[in-house]
Image (cartoon, rainbow, N blue to C red; front, side, top):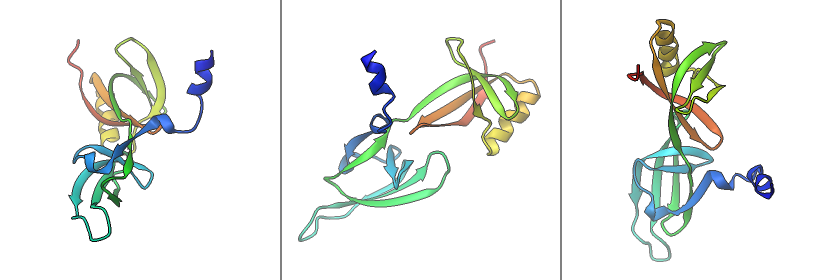
Length: 154
């Protein structure tokens, strides 16, 4: 009962974890200007006369595709989002929302078909009667369908 109180706290602390800037790697994830991003470029400057080595990060927002940049001393911590991927079987599309079933048979209908090329393709292929598995990416209380594949488990 006491655990439930802490679960619902809206501090956002459990959505990210700190990691030293010098420990970040290309193709990893990091929060840049408040957005969960995939690191596409990284460069480290040499230590100056009066300072630390600086790390220049360039990342692409994993949901919007926008590019963000930041510079951080290599010894400082950056927030890294907890990013999860999960595959669901698409069972229906109704009024722009997808009905998705996980491996345990649980159905969720809270995700909209994304307004992107992937979303258009998912809707078109579902309308043709194809059995699809949809990959959902989740980070910082945001979930988005980022990919799909034909379901081979028939």
